[in-house]
Image (cartoon, rainbow, N blue to C red):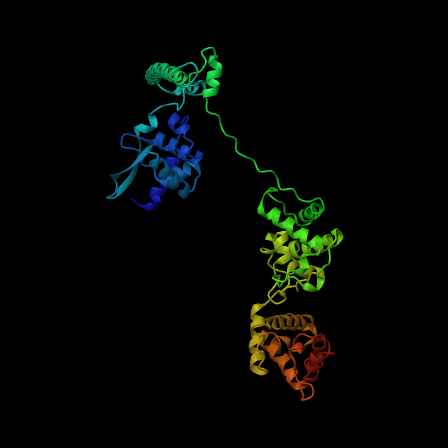
Length: 449
């Protein structure tokens, strides 16, 4: 059959497909593992399921439900995995090829409702109202099955109750005999009441000893409060090792014995004997807060600094080069602003500046001096864009990157002398673009006055 005719037949079949409604079993409807799309796909398969199954393809079902083929394929796979439908194949009568069939399994018709109602009918009111479309015969069969299930479960409950009562009676008899034996062995006064006997023989639960909270000195607690307020770090409890160690460290700092730590190189001994006041501690932490919370200040990576405790803040070194703790660094110097990062607007332009400088002046700008190349590329490209209307033959001699960079380096070579050699600062300096480069273009006749 021709593919165009096939498509026309499918379209005609779609437009001639008229029904009064769709239906699905309660087992599928109340299945929480299925999505709404899966349930709608099942309802269409159930509707088209004939003697040999449903022959509809994924695309045809997708046209009915307005779903994509991927959604239909996923839904069919989920229904097969749940064993609500099964996949089969059959040979087409019109062409010699295998066709897929989808058949609804008996599992989909099991247990119309997954729960029981209060009236012992086996069906809740919400589900029972939906049986108007089911045959009366099927409805009576389901009700009879539900009643039988409930009767069987009730009988099992009665048996369990009888067994429990018998076990309870046996346990009481055993306890009473054991109590009588223990009374005889201990020769307890017979006039003693049974309640007192039970109370004495009952094993008592031992209470776990609760450690009292660590008491921080009143002179130290304000320092702890200032630390928590400024840094935002709180303690899990007063019995933690972190809280105790921080209190001891502040105690040494307040008493004046902190700066005489000979075994700690990060603590400067020149402050030996000084006692840090609460105001000085607050001022130090305000500087530390800029380093810890502000992205514009050193260090760039805030991961380690945000985990510091008071003890590590006082003793740990900030950087190997200074060999000073964070605390000493905050006392002696102000927080350093990070240099703003240059944006490499045109990386190709920057790379050509690096190559040309290496070729002409043997300057290596590829490693730590790439910022010089970036500033040169940004200023040089901006210069030619701003002065495009003043440069004659721009499209021929100064349009491309290599032409602009080569012209700049030619100007630097021309102005170079033994007394004033070319330097990298001339690549981006204001003197170059305000005076030297315009004079050079004017001398070669490229600048229109």
